[in-house]
Amino acid sequence: MYTTSTEGLLNNYAVEPPVYYAEFPSEWQIQRYTLQGAIAAWLVGLTILTAVSVS
Image (tube, rainbow, N blue to C red; front, side, top):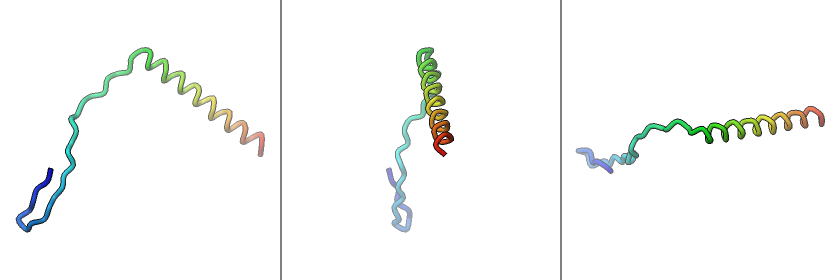
């Protein structure tokens, strides 16, 4: 979509997508996010422990 001013300048505008509200995650998605968070925390802890033991 674009418009042209009285001076002949071109103004380009992005096409806006339709707005929608996010849905609350289902029970199995919440459990999966919890598991992923626990694994991520374990990996970060393991990385820090490895860095401290090497140095």
